[in-house]
Image (tube, rainbow, N blue to C red; front, side, top):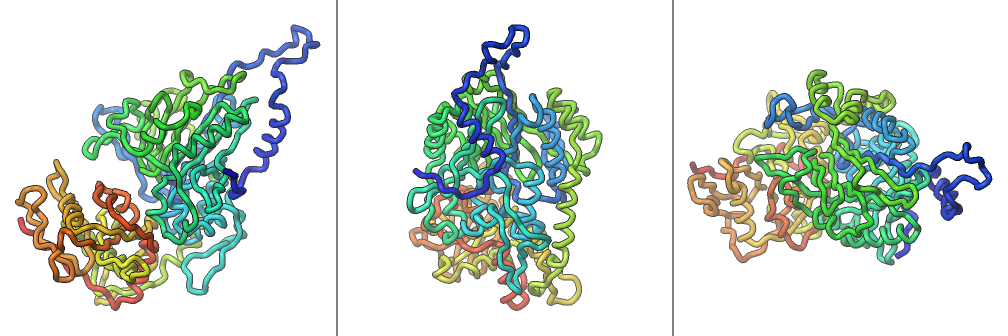
Length: 608
């Protein structure tokens, strides 16, 4: 398999590697002629601090972001802590590098995919150039891609990473090179399991970092499920292979070059704890650790020493077959840090002597008392970093400039509504039904998937659409974006009538006192009988006035988060004949433009 020269590598690192390659066999001892008193003992080990974050999704501004952490003052209780924002993330990264054993030169910053895609307006409006530039300033050294990097297709991904301005259409909301020429990412991009039709890897499978006389290899991989959750045309001709197998091939290639310390950054993940009892992200007992990353890690070559994971937006610090597996939530609210100790003579990682931690990204909204209480509960080295970290001014200035440039577009009108669409009610809301109708309209055409119905998860509806005064009311682009900010793509799939009914029944799973009801599109109706036994609550299920037949296939459209089983919708993972569609926001805006002032109407009949 021949690597394809796709992605940007840091010139300095390559130059250092080229020099190192010509001296790899040189003895490490001082010259024999040196007097004994002048001999300098060679270090027996080399340290490397690996600082990682995942699923950033362009969250440049902290906004109302927060995370939940154990309350150090009240065992068993939790605190909701304001966290995140690119400036605060960059400030913590800066301190962690400066305080690394051996200094900043013995540190590396890794991004584990979904740096872009499913982003707030301040990133999406500028084709994510704003996010890439901020992460350049933050100092990312190496990254893999996530499924969302492919949302706009492989050609646009090549531009975003490589630089250059995209054409700006006269009526297009998104703008490229809005503030200045765009030069692309300054980090190495590594992905081992995505191949082109001729068998080449789309990106370099690995990257080598020389540090303290040893070499450390970094291998990337993205979830193999990517083709089913992005627009099909964007990944046409690409093959997304088994993550573990691809990483093992790349690891063998690194070992053939004499690299003995290897880190895998994988855009796939897992979770710990349960819905009612979320686990501490630093609890190394990792109760109930499960998910695809567990199987992937178990199948990895013993030469892989550390696994940085992503995709599931969870926090954990686990051991699988003696290897640390880390993830730090999402949106820049936390970082995973691993201090590797490497034998200077063999280049092998001494796993028994390393350390790791997940750390929160405190910001200017984090109360001082809360910040100190949480820092005081950390081991000393990590407490020092949390106390010292301050937002990085250079990043704050970049973010402020892009936020100001986004303001006019946020106010642009995109359509009208005939009344308010809110999220109130039994989770099946008027706002959710508006989105479901928009998604059905975007994929009803047979060429776009032939959808017959749409379902929208309540957690994906992030705001109301207000309608003050006399309808119809104007809706701005910013309002539509705030309602649908994730940038999920649409996925059309086939479910049988029996599978559809089972999916709706699962809205109230075991142990839940009330259902979490998806919003259906126009035409899908049923009666929910709360007092009926589990599995019999969905009654009189019809589509376009006709009973849904258990043995008949139906084309269903949902967002990509739901399609992968998000929000506990495991039944959607069984969907067949999948076809990716447009972005959810684009579908909503198109619906508001083409539909004359839509009005909210109820579709689920409730029976207590």
